[in-house]
Image (cartoon, rainbow, N blue to C red; front, side, top):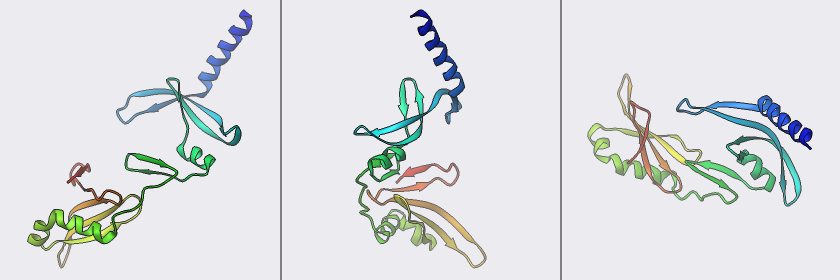
Length: 165
Protein backbone atom coordinates (compact mmCIF):
# COMPACT_ATOMS: atom_id res chain seq x y z
CA UNK A 1 0.00 0.00 0.00
CA UNK A 2 2.80 2.40 0.96
CA UNK A 3 4.69 1.59 -2.26
CA UNK A 4 1.58 2.31 -4.38
CA UNK A 5 1.00 5.64 -2.60
CA UNK A 6 4.68 6.52 -2.91
CA UNK A 7 4.61 5.65 -6.63
CA UNK A 8 1.46 7.75 -7.12
CA UNK A 9 3.02 10.78 -5.44
CA UNK A 10 6.23 10.44 -7.43
CA UNK A 11 4.19 10.06 -10.64
CA UNK A 12 2.13 13.16 -9.89
CA UNK A 13 5.27 15.13 -9.06
CA UNK A 14 7.07 14.09 -12.25
CA UNK A 15 3.94 14.69 -14.32
CA UNK A 16 3.56 18.14 -12.82
CA UNK A 17 7.18 18.95 -13.58
CA UNK A 18 6.86 17.75 -17.18
CA UNK A 19 3.59 19.56 -17.90
CA UNK A 20 4.08 22.59 -15.69
CA UNK A 21 3.63 25.94 -17.40
CA UNK A 22 4.84 29.33 -16.28
CA UNK A 23 2.82 32.30 -17.51
CA UNK A 24 3.42 35.97 -16.95
CA UNK A 25 0.50 38.25 -16.19
CA UNK A 26 0.44 41.84 -17.43
CA UNK A 27 1.85 42.94 -14.07
CA UNK A 28 4.91 40.72 -14.56
CA UNK A 29 3.90 38.32 -11.78
CA UNK A 30 5.00 34.74 -12.39
CA UNK A 31 2.14 32.23 -12.34
CA UNK A 32 2.62 28.46 -12.29
CA UNK A 33 -0.07 26.35 -13.88
CA UNK A 34 -0.36 22.90 -15.39
CA UNK A 35 -1.36 22.43 -19.01
CA UNK A 36 -3.15 19.17 -19.65
CA UNK A 37 -5.19 17.58 -22.45
CA UNK A 38 -8.72 16.86 -21.27
CA UNK A 39 -11.70 15.14 -22.87
CA UNK A 40 -14.92 17.19 -22.93
CA UNK A 41 -18.08 15.20 -22.25
CA UNK A 42 -21.61 16.52 -22.65
CA UNK A 43 -24.38 14.44 -21.07
CA UNK A 44 -21.97 11.49 -20.80
CA UNK A 45 -20.94 11.61 -24.47
CA UNK A 46 -17.36 12.54 -25.44
CA UNK A 47 -17.42 15.56 -27.76
CA UNK A 48 -13.77 16.65 -28.14
CA UNK A 49 -10.31 16.82 -26.61
CA UNK A 50 -8.79 20.19 -25.75
CA UNK A 51 -5.96 21.75 -23.78
CA UNK A 52 -6.83 22.93 -20.28
CA UNK A 53 -4.94 24.96 -17.70
CA UNK A 54 -5.09 23.89 -14.08
CA UNK A 55 -4.32 26.67 -11.64
CA UNK A 56 -4.88 26.58 -7.87
CA UNK A 57 -7.29 23.66 -8.15
CA UNK A 58 -9.43 25.22 -10.89
CA UNK A 59 -9.50 23.85 -14.43
CA UNK A 60 -9.76 26.41 -17.24
CA UNK A 61 -10.87 25.24 -20.69
CA UNK A 62 -11.32 27.35 -23.83
CA UNK A 63 -14.87 28.70 -24.10
CA UNK A 64 -14.79 27.95 -27.85
CA UNK A 65 -14.23 24.24 -27.13
CA UNK A 66 -17.14 24.16 -24.69
CA UNK A 67 -19.49 26.07 -26.99
CA UNK A 68 -18.60 23.91 -30.00
CA UNK A 69 -19.21 20.80 -27.89
CA UNK A 70 -22.72 21.90 -27.00
CA UNK A 71 -23.43 23.38 -30.44
CA UNK A 72 -23.74 27.00 -29.28
CA UNK A 73 -22.23 30.27 -30.54
CA UNK A 74 -19.63 32.02 -28.40
CA UNK A 75 -18.44 35.61 -28.43
CA UNK A 76 -16.49 37.95 -26.20
CA UNK A 77 -17.92 41.45 -26.30
CA UNK A 78 -16.11 43.87 -24.06
CA UNK A 79 -15.76 42.06 -20.75
CA UNK A 80 -18.83 39.86 -21.37
CA UNK A 81 -18.62 36.28 -22.60
CA UNK A 82 -21.75 35.01 -24.35
CA UNK A 83 -22.37 31.32 -24.99
CA UNK A 84 -25.60 30.53 -26.81
CA UNK A 85 -27.93 33.46 -27.31
CA UNK A 86 -25.99 36.49 -28.54
CA UNK A 87 -26.86 40.11 -27.74
CA UNK A 88 -28.95 41.89 -30.33
CA UNK A 89 -27.41 44.86 -32.10
CA UNK A 90 -29.68 47.74 -31.14
CA UNK A 91 -27.66 50.69 -32.41
CA UNK A 92 -27.46 51.25 -36.18
CA UNK A 93 -24.46 52.83 -37.89
CA UNK A 94 -26.43 56.06 -38.45
CA UNK A 95 -27.54 56.20 -34.81
CA UNK A 96 -23.95 55.61 -33.66
CA UNK A 97 -22.82 58.52 -35.85
CA UNK A 98 -25.47 60.74 -34.22
CA UNK A 99 -24.38 59.70 -30.73
CA UNK A 100 -20.75 60.64 -31.43
CA UNK A 101 -21.75 63.89 -33.11
CA UNK A 102 -23.98 64.88 -30.18
CA UNK A 103 -21.12 64.28 -27.72
CA UNK A 104 -18.64 66.49 -29.61
CA UNK A 105 -20.95 68.86 -31.51
CA UNK A 106 -19.30 72.06 -30.26
CA UNK A 107 -15.83 70.95 -31.40
CA UNK A 108 -17.14 69.62 -34.73
CA UNK A 109 -18.78 72.95 -35.50
CA UNK A 110 -15.94 75.10 -34.13
CA UNK A 111 -13.13 73.32 -36.03
CA UNK A 112 -15.12 72.04 -39.06
CA UNK A 113 -14.30 68.45 -38.10
CA UNK A 114 -15.31 65.45 -40.16
CA UNK A 115 -16.45 62.09 -38.78
CA UNK A 116 -15.64 58.85 -40.59
CA UNK A 117 -16.54 55.26 -39.72
CA UNK A 118 -13.27 53.33 -39.35
CA UNK A 119 -14.53 49.91 -38.24
CA UNK A 120 -18.02 48.50 -37.82
CA UNK A 121 -17.29 44.89 -36.85
CA UNK A 122 -17.48 43.26 -33.45
CA UNK A 123 -19.51 44.85 -30.68
CA UNK A 124 -18.71 48.46 -31.46
CA UNK A 125 -18.45 51.08 -34.15
CA UNK A 126 -15.17 52.99 -34.33
CA UNK A 127 -15.18 56.54 -35.66
CA UNK A 128 -12.26 58.75 -36.57
CA UNK A 129 -12.81 62.48 -36.09
CA UNK A 130 -10.43 64.67 -38.07
CA UNK A 131 -9.65 68.01 -39.70
CA UNK A 132 -9.20 67.75 -43.46
CA UNK A 133 -6.67 70.35 -44.63
CA UNK A 134 -5.55 70.76 -48.22
CA UNK A 135 -2.08 69.31 -47.61
CA UNK A 136 -2.60 67.12 -44.54
CA UNK A 137 -5.13 65.55 -42.19
CA UNK A 138 -5.16 66.09 -38.41
CA UNK A 139 -6.79 63.41 -36.29
CA UNK A 140 -8.87 64.93 -33.52
CA UNK A 141 -9.67 61.58 -31.90
CA UNK A 142 -11.11 58.08 -32.09
CA UNK A 143 -14.57 57.41 -30.68
CA UNK A 144 -16.31 54.09 -30.06
CA UNK A 145 -20.02 53.30 -29.78
CA UNK A 146 -21.20 50.04 -28.22
CA UNK A 147 -23.70 48.44 -30.63
CA UNK A 148 -25.82 47.03 -27.82
CA UNK A 149 -25.87 49.82 -25.24
CA UNK A 150 -25.05 52.93 -27.27
CA UNK A 151 -22.34 53.95 -24.77
CA UNK A 152 -19.81 56.33 -26.32
CA UNK A 153 -16.14 56.23 -25.36
CA UNK A 154 -13.01 57.99 -26.58
CA UNK A 155 -9.42 56.87 -26.91
CA UNK A 156 -6.96 59.13 -25.09
CA UNK A 157 -4.47 59.93 -27.87
CA UNK A 158 -1.48 60.17 -25.51
CA UNK A 159 -2.04 57.11 -23.30
CA UNK A 160 -4.16 54.91 -25.57
CA UNK A 161 -6.68 54.42 -22.77
CA UNK A 162 -10.37 54.16 -23.63
CA UNK A 163 -12.52 56.45 -21.49
CA UNK A 164 -16.32 56.57 -21.32
CA UNK A 165 -17.89 59.92 -22.19
